[in-house]
Length: 593
Image (cartoon, rainbow, N blue to C red):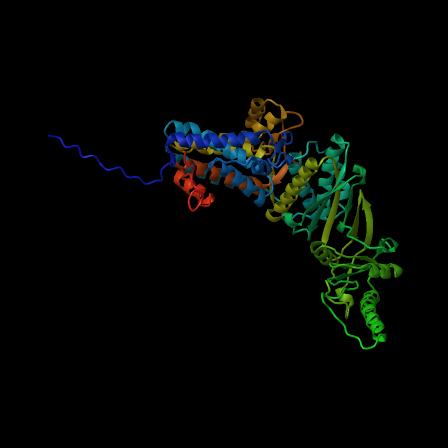
């Protein structure tokens, strides 16, 4: 007699939980990541296309920046979100290469997909990929060119080339116009030189393609040559009107004119070497507090109270004028009486200046914000070479040029629609971040797919020395690196197979002279990227390979996906709670028939 002893079923997960595991779900995750990579694939390089993204709020964004596109796509797939994260980390850490890191991660997974389908354990792939990543980064460090120990003029040239490489993928155009301003830029401070190089590219693009113009102001604060500030120092203001030829560069601080009272137009609007007084007090007659009451025994005392009030405000104004300051700025209001008082004494004043602008002026001019007008000494006054109020479009700007205590620059750009100006701002941000990273890390490599092809050749050669399956995995990793030059050719309309064959032949030369050769976007062939000024900081490529490899390994290491939605009972209870208990209590009963 056979007794059927059935094992009891063990339930671990909540009812309605969706689980998927094994090879099919791993392939599904890889396919999702490849689909995301295909979205930004066409935006890579100087001939990359833009994406127009329209969100549910009606905002329209036109961009080819990988991080911006990934952020606006609102991806919900849990595995594909990893690519969004690495694009954001690349943007925050380096500032450029966001499309590159997404493409590399997608290509690494694409090359791993056939091995997974054939039954290769993912851990073998992960181990080989990490080994290949380490070898690739070491090769990049070996091929990188250091800018340490070079003269200031050589540093300017190298950094300008890095900025040009970054902007070439943002705004379409060659580099001939970029080179035309170099002779002038070499005589300027490093920060202004970089800024002007960016302005030239942006203005050229807008001049070629747009007839309706707006103003865009970028404030880029800089310290000395060995220190470039973060992107938080860059501000932008849109001002309608004007033409492209009205664009200008200010070596100093600028902010929009604040609210003013009658008498303001009588004040002078230009000073040479003025002293600047920064205040955080009101310069106007104050009204009494609520329910204030003064009891007088003699009507003649009323006039003395009124006179005392006027004497207080005039005493403050006299002390400001006697300090020798020709420009008075205050975070609080400067009333009509004070405005006319300063106008009569040829002093410029501006009240209700924002805290941020006041602090920037204080840092640049060397002044100190005062909370009282008593005992104002020369040490607390700021100074600059030139102050003027200038009309830009429909707005006026207060401009402080030649500030002694800080390297500041204000760039006024003219552009078309708001979407194009916003894209110019993102391009400028990327270029500034690239220059900043190049200054900090001081090594650059050849762009245009040259470094990718050289690493690919090196890894293929290294794989021949390895016995076992790892040779195939490292070869697939090397093949994935070729996606960068291949996509550059595809986006430019060239024959990718022909160009890649030429690059492989050039990089295979035993002398090593083909290492800097990459894709020539202008001719459709290959060219020396160093000679063509296509340079980028080594940290960009190192960070991209690191992040892309880690993302690929992370997706490959997932063997089960568990989705735990809210149960129906929980939703039902929430709905019952929202009803507020209606249906019970002392309501009217149903009518009987």
